[in-house]
Structures are given as structure tokens and as C-alpha cells.
Image (cartoon, rainbow, N blue to C red):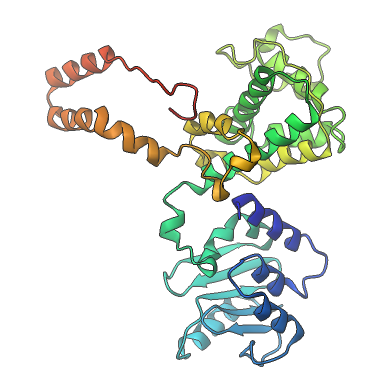
Length: 354
């Protein structure tokens, strides 16, 4: 299952008004926990739940869970003490008051202390239920995977809704959208400014989102003091962006409730400060036909895979020369001059990160 599917399924659970079935709903997201186990747990049949305490669920080897309205830390400490006395420890301890969550992976000793509403962004903490250990998951940057998957889905939706749009216009829109999302998380714009303005100044059905995008993009290429005085205040507050990224006119696109929601999710559900700017090419590569994409976002060229190629080609030698030249100004200057003269031919240019 793709990362965004985990997040979206858990978000649906979090958004429920009634959390009486929270833990069984949450367990059902992880495919390798048997459906029969979850069904018996829901119905209270058999000896699946080894705890007899109200509000507790103890699944042997998997989970000791407790929901409470008491001070969370004290309940967590008491439950941890109880688990320490068990002969066979559950993989996870999980305590919540549906405002906050405290959890622990008893195998790795990793802990989790988050707001209840933030659980979708931490689904990977519990991936051991699916046989995926953290060391395996962290071989790729999960934030990069999330971003690539979300943009692939967004591209599918916008392409479907705009069958006559040009590939150039679609890709240029995605590049500019990526820039705005990076900008609002990295200090170029105010924090969450772009996403919040979409939420505040466009309709939920997305019918006026293209007007918003067009007005913003055409003014980002204009110095603040040269902008039309009649512009809305929300446009005027954005800084001028140089580099000609916004010099070309925006190709009008049709947006819907679905595409607007996906854009907002990309702003709200992703921390762009933790995402490699290098993945821009990967995201554009990710718009290949939907049926060719593999799960967990491995449809793009990851940074580790790129390094496997370019390190032995030239980076390792340059790094070694740099280490040997440390402290020697003349040798460092020679290395600097050498790097400036290196030329590369990239036969895969345009195909992802390379």
C-alpha cells in the first residue's frame, strides 16, 4: 500500500466523531494483522484480547493499548510497568486520551509523543505490524516518497480534468506549485501562507482556483513596488521571485474539489523542510501512467540510488582529494579550479533526478 493510502485511511479514522472503535479501525489499516483477529476483537469473542480491564486491548506480541481520561503520562508509566512484568512483550505500547498519543516500540525503544490529530503523519512508526522495520523504511527518505506520491496523484487528477492541456503547461504549473510549497515552509514566504490563502480565498469546489493561481503567478514576477495598486492585499504581500520562474503566462486549468483538496493536503500534510529539492525531476517522472507506479513511491529515482552511480564516477575521487588538501590553501585552490573545469554529459537528462 502506498504511503498516501496509509495516511488517508488513518485520517478518516481520526476525523470520526466517535472513537469507540478507534483501535480496531487503526489496526485494520495494517494489512498483515489478520482480519479474523480484528473481527474477534471488535465483537469481543474468543481470547484475542488478553486484558480484562475496561478500555484496554492486549494483543499478544503486537500491542498493549489503553484509552483514558486520566493524566496521560501517569497512565503510560503504569502501563509500561505492567508490560515489563509480562513474559512475552507486545511490540507496541499505545496510550491515548484522543487529544494526545504516547507510544513505544518495545523492540527498538523508540518512543512517540504526538497530538492525536497528527497520527496519520506517523503511520510508519507502526510498520513493524507489516513486517517492515524502521531501518528498511528509512533507506529512502519517507518525506520524499510522500511528496512524490501526492504529486503523482495530483497530476493524474488535473490531467483527467484537463484533457486538452499541454504537457508543458501542466509541468510548468507543477514546478511553480512545488516552488510555492517549498517557499512557505522554508522562509521565502510566510509559514503556510500559500496553502492558507488557497483555503481562505478560493471556493471549496475549486471553480475559482485557476483565477487565484493566475493572479498570484503573474505577480510573483513583478517587483512589489511595480505592482498594480488595485491588486488584492493577499497578492501584494508576496515577495518578488526572480529567476524567471514566473515570467511565462500561466496556462489556464480547470480545478475541482478533488484537485483543490490534493493541493491543500500537499501543503498541510507535508513538511517541505525535510524534503530534498532534488526530487523535483523525480516528481515529474512520477507522472508516468498510473498503472506503472509501484507501491511505497518507488517510482522515482531516489537520492541514494543516484549516489550509487555518481559517487564512484567522480565524487569519491573529489572527496578524497579534498580531504588530502585540507589546510593547504594552494591545493584547495587547485581543486577549486579543477572542479570548475569539469564537464559532464548526461544521456538521461530530463528523466528524473539525473
